[in-house]
Amino acid sequence: DAKTTQPPSMDCAEGRAANLPCNHSTISGNEYVYWYRQIHSQGPQYIIHGLKNNETNEMASLIITEDRKSSTLILPHATLRDTAVYYCIVRVASADTPLVFGKGTRLSVIA
Amino acid sequence: DGGITQSPKYLFRKEGQNVTLSCEQNLNHDAMYWYRQDPGQGLRLIYYSQIVNDFQKGDIAEGYSVSREKKESFPLTVTSAQKNPTAFYLCASSIDLSGFNEQFFGPGTRLTVL
Image 1 (cartoon, helix red, strand yellow):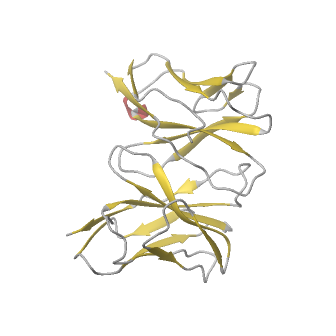
Image 2 (cartoon, rainbow over the protein chains, first blue to last red):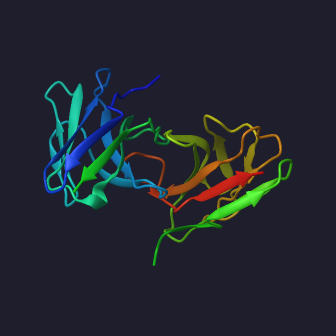
Protein backbone atom coordinates (compact mmCIF):
# COMPACT_ATOMS: atom_id res chain seq x y z
CA ASP A 1 0.00 0.00 0.00
CA ALA A 2 1.40 3.37 -1.02
CA LYS A 3 1.80 5.75 1.89
CA THR A 4 2.46 8.74 -0.36
CA THR A 5 0.97 10.14 -3.55
CA GLN A 6 3.03 12.24 -5.95
CA PRO A 7 2.29 13.56 -9.44
CA PRO A 8 4.13 11.45 -12.03
CA SER A 9 5.78 14.40 -13.72
CA MET A 10 6.31 18.16 -13.54
CA ASP A 11 8.10 20.83 -15.55
CA CYS A 12 9.89 23.88 -14.19
CA ALA A 13 11.64 26.75 -15.94
CA GLU A 14 15.32 27.14 -15.16
CA GLY A 15 15.92 29.71 -12.44
CA ARG A 16 12.42 29.47 -11.07
CA ALA A 17 11.37 27.71 -7.89
CA ALA A 18 10.33 24.09 -8.26
CA ASN A 19 7.55 23.08 -5.88
CA LEU A 20 7.05 19.33 -5.64
CA PRO A 21 3.93 18.20 -3.76
CA CYS A 22 3.42 15.02 -1.77
CA ASN A 23 0.24 13.76 -0.15
CA HIS A 24 0.51 11.52 2.90
CA SER A 25 -2.95 11.68 4.39
CA THR A 26 -2.51 8.55 6.55
CA ILE A 27 0.73 9.66 8.16
CA SER A 28 0.98 8.78 11.83
CA GLY A 29 2.39 10.93 14.60
CA ASN A 30 5.82 9.35 14.72
CA GLU A 31 6.42 9.16 10.97
CA TYR A 32 8.87 11.47 9.26
CA VAL A 33 8.77 12.72 5.69
CA TYR A 34 11.91 12.06 3.64
CA TRP A 35 12.89 13.27 0.20
CA TYR A 36 15.43 11.65 -2.09
CA ARG A 37 16.17 12.30 -5.73
CA GLN A 38 17.61 10.17 -8.50
CA ILE A 39 19.36 11.65 -11.47
CA HIS A 40 19.16 9.47 -14.55
CA SER A 41 21.15 6.21 -14.27
CA GLN A 42 22.60 7.13 -10.88
CA GLY A 43 21.82 6.06 -7.32
CA PRO A 44 19.34 8.15 -5.30
CA GLN A 45 20.61 11.01 -3.19
CA TYR A 46 19.22 12.17 0.14
CA ILE A 47 17.80 15.70 0.12
CA ILE A 48 16.02 16.48 3.36
CA HIS A 49 13.63 15.12 5.98
CA GLY A 50 11.29 16.50 8.63
CA LEU A 51 8.68 15.62 11.21
CA LYS A 52 6.40 18.64 11.56
CA ASN A 53 8.49 21.78 11.40
CA ASN A 54 9.61 23.27 8.14
CA GLU A 55 13.19 22.38 7.31
CA THR A 56 15.80 24.00 5.10
CA ASN A 57 19.27 22.99 4.02
CA GLU A 58 21.65 23.93 1.24
CA MET A 59 19.72 21.88 -1.30
CA ALA A 60 16.06 22.52 -0.58
CA SER A 61 13.27 23.48 1.78
CA LEU A 62 10.60 21.16 3.11
CA ILE A 63 7.23 22.62 4.01
CA ILE A 64 4.89 20.34 5.98
CA THR A 65 1.28 21.36 6.49
CA GLU A 66 -0.01 21.82 10.00
CA ASP A 67 -2.13 18.67 9.83
CA ARG A 68 0.91 16.85 8.35
CA LYS A 69 -1.20 15.31 5.60
CA SER A 70 0.86 16.83 2.83
CA SER A 71 4.21 18.44 2.20
CA THR A 72 6.06 20.36 -0.49
CA LEU A 73 9.70 20.15 -1.45
CA ILE A 74 10.98 23.47 -2.75
CA LEU A 75 14.06 23.89 -4.91
CA PRO A 76 14.41 27.68 -4.78
CA HIS A 77 16.27 28.25 -8.05
CA ALA A 78 16.05 25.17 -10.22
CA THR A 79 18.89 24.41 -12.61
CA LEU A 80 19.16 21.90 -15.43
CA ARG A 81 21.10 19.65 -13.05
CA ASP A 82 18.02 19.37 -10.84
CA THR A 83 16.28 17.32 -13.55
CA ALA A 84 15.64 14.03 -11.75
CA VAL A 85 13.02 11.76 -10.20
CA TYR A 86 12.09 12.98 -6.71
CA TYR A 87 10.85 10.48 -4.14
CA CYS A 88 8.75 11.38 -1.11
CA ILE A 89 8.91 8.69 1.58
CA VAL A 90 7.14 8.39 4.91
CA ARG A 91 8.51 6.20 7.66
CA VAL A 92 9.06 5.92 11.39
CA ALA A 93 12.58 7.16 12.00
CA SER A 94 13.25 4.91 14.95
CA ALA A 95 12.09 1.74 13.22
CA ASP A 96 14.68 -0.70 11.92
CA THR A 97 13.15 -0.96 8.49
CA PRO A 98 14.59 0.15 5.17
CA LEU A 99 13.24 2.92 2.98
CA VAL A 100 10.38 2.04 0.66
CA PHE A 101 10.47 3.95 -2.62
CA GLY A 102 7.42 4.69 -4.74
CA LYS A 103 7.52 5.89 -8.33
CA GLY A 104 8.24 9.51 -7.45
CA THR A 105 7.84 12.65 -9.55
CA ARG A 106 9.92 13.17 -12.65
CA LEU A 107 10.96 16.83 -12.62
CA SER A 108 12.15 18.30 -15.90
CA VAL A 109 13.89 21.66 -15.64
CA ILE A 110 13.61 23.47 -18.95
CA ALA A 111 16.00 26.15 -20.22
CA ASP B 1 37.32 9.23 -0.84
CA GLY B 2 34.63 7.55 1.24
CA GLY B 3 31.76 5.97 -0.59
CA ILE B 4 30.12 2.95 -2.12
CA THR B 5 31.50 1.18 -5.14
CA GLN B 6 29.64 -1.20 -7.37
CA SER B 7 31.27 -3.14 -10.11
CA PRO B 8 30.98 -3.56 -12.95
CA LYS B 9 28.80 -0.72 -14.25
CA TYR B 10 27.44 -2.88 -17.06
CA LEU B 11 27.16 -6.66 -16.96
CA PHE B 12 25.97 -9.10 -19.58
CA ARG B 13 25.16 -12.73 -18.91
CA LYS B 14 23.55 -15.60 -20.73
CA GLU B 15 20.25 -16.91 -19.52
CA GLY B 16 20.62 -19.69 -16.96
CA GLN B 17 23.90 -18.43 -15.51
CA ASN B 18 24.32 -17.21 -11.98
CA VAL B 19 25.99 -13.82 -11.63
CA THR B 20 27.36 -11.99 -8.60
CA LEU B 21 27.21 -8.21 -8.27
CA SER B 22 29.80 -6.55 -6.09
CA CYS B 23 29.12 -3.86 -3.48
CA GLU B 24 31.82 -2.39 -1.25
CA GLN B 25 31.65 0.52 1.18
CA ASN B 26 34.36 2.25 3.20
CA LEU B 27 31.99 4.39 5.26
CA ASN B 28 32.10 2.03 8.26
CA HIS B 29 28.34 1.58 7.96
CA ASP B 30 26.60 -1.32 9.67
CA ALA B 31 23.55 -1.47 7.40
CA MET B 32 23.63 -2.35 3.71
CA TYR B 33 20.88 -2.82 1.12
CA TRP B 34 20.19 -4.09 -2.37
CA TYR B 35 17.47 -2.59 -4.56
CA ARG B 36 16.29 -3.40 -8.03
CA GLN B 37 14.93 -0.81 -10.45
CA ASP B 38 13.08 -1.51 -13.69
CA PRO B 39 12.56 1.15 -16.38
CA GLY B 40 10.17 3.89 -15.26
CA GLN B 41 9.70 2.29 -11.85
CA GLY B 42 10.76 3.05 -8.33
CA LEU B 43 13.26 1.04 -6.33
CA ARG B 44 12.25 -2.32 -4.90
CA LEU B 45 14.07 -3.85 -1.96
CA ILE B 46 15.71 -7.24 -2.51
CA TYR B 47 17.73 -7.86 0.67
CA TYR B 48 19.15 -5.85 3.52
CA SER B 49 21.64 -6.45 6.29
CA GLN B 50 21.73 -4.76 9.64
CA ILE B 51 25.03 -6.24 10.75
CA VAL B 52 27.74 -8.68 9.70
CA ASN B 53 26.53 -12.28 9.29
CA ASP B 54 22.89 -11.23 9.34
CA PHE B 55 20.53 -10.31 6.51
CA GLN B 56 16.82 -10.10 5.86
CA LYS B 57 14.66 -10.63 2.79
CA GLY B 58 13.07 -7.62 1.22
CA ASP B 59 9.98 -7.48 -0.96
CA ILE B 60 11.40 -9.33 -3.96
CA ALA B 61 14.05 -11.76 -2.62
CA GLU B 62 13.06 -14.76 -4.71
CA GLY B 63 15.80 -15.76 -7.14
CA TYR B 64 18.47 -13.76 -5.28
CA SER B 65 20.97 -14.55 -2.54
CA VAL B 66 23.37 -12.46 -0.48
CA SER B 67 26.14 -12.83 2.06
CA ARG B 68 27.58 -10.47 4.65
CA GLU B 69 30.85 -11.93 5.80
CA LYS B 70 32.58 -8.56 6.13
CA LYS B 71 31.23 -5.22 7.26
CA GLU B 72 32.33 -3.47 4.08
CA SER B 73 31.04 -6.01 1.57
CA PHE B 74 27.53 -7.15 0.60
CA PRO B 75 27.58 -9.12 -2.67
CA LEU B 76 24.35 -10.04 -4.44
CA THR B 77 24.01 -13.22 -6.50
CA VAL B 78 21.35 -13.29 -9.18
CA THR B 79 20.54 -16.95 -9.65
CA SER B 80 19.04 -18.75 -12.61
CA ALA B 81 15.82 -18.99 -10.61
CA GLN B 82 15.22 -15.24 -11.04
CA LYS B 83 12.77 -15.18 -13.94
CA ASN B 84 13.41 -11.66 -15.19
CA PRO B 85 16.87 -10.57 -13.99
CA THR B 86 17.52 -7.78 -16.49
CA ALA B 87 17.40 -4.57 -14.42
CA PHE B 88 19.38 -1.78 -12.77
CA TYR B 89 20.73 -2.91 -9.39
CA LEU B 90 21.54 -0.42 -6.65
CA CYS B 91 23.45 -1.02 -3.45
CA ALA B 92 23.17 1.32 -0.48
CA SER B 93 24.47 1.67 3.06
CA SER B 94 23.71 3.65 6.19
CA ILE B 95 25.08 3.92 9.71
CA ASP B 96 22.18 1.81 10.92
CA LEU B 97 18.67 0.90 9.81
CA SER B 98 16.97 3.83 11.52
CA GLY B 99 15.70 6.80 9.58
CA PHE B 100 17.85 9.15 11.60
CA ASN B 101 20.69 8.39 9.21
CA GLU B 102 20.52 8.84 5.47
CA GLN B 103 21.12 6.05 3.02
CA PHE B 104 24.03 6.45 0.64
CA PHE B 105 23.76 4.79 -2.74
CA GLY B 106 26.32 3.38 -5.10
CA PRO B 107 26.36 4.16 -8.84
CA GLY B 108 24.53 0.95 -9.73
CA THR B 109 25.11 -2.05 -11.98
CA ARG B 110 23.02 -2.49 -15.10
CA LEU B 111 22.55 -6.22 -15.68
CA THR B 112 21.40 -7.54 -19.02
CA VAL B 113 20.62 -11.22 -19.42
CA LEU B 114 20.65 -12.36 -23.02
